[in-house]
Length: 101
Image (cartoon, rainbow, N blue to C red):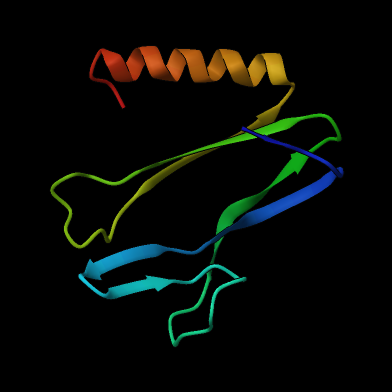
């Protein structure tokens, strides 16, 4: 869960990766790393999410185990008061433990 430090719209999320391909071959694409031809990415949400100061944001990203390479994914993003989001996370964890997604 990430705290919202400024009210406004959340348009998506940025991503980077850290991959050890084999002994001696390690690629990282975080902003503080040496630049490569692999860059950071931005994944826009279908609709902006409104977030208020003091809210927290939680995101789940599900990639099917049999989907290699991962071409399809399902994403859930929620924003709200910390107690509401904590309850959502507890419910998601219980559902996951029972085999639901």
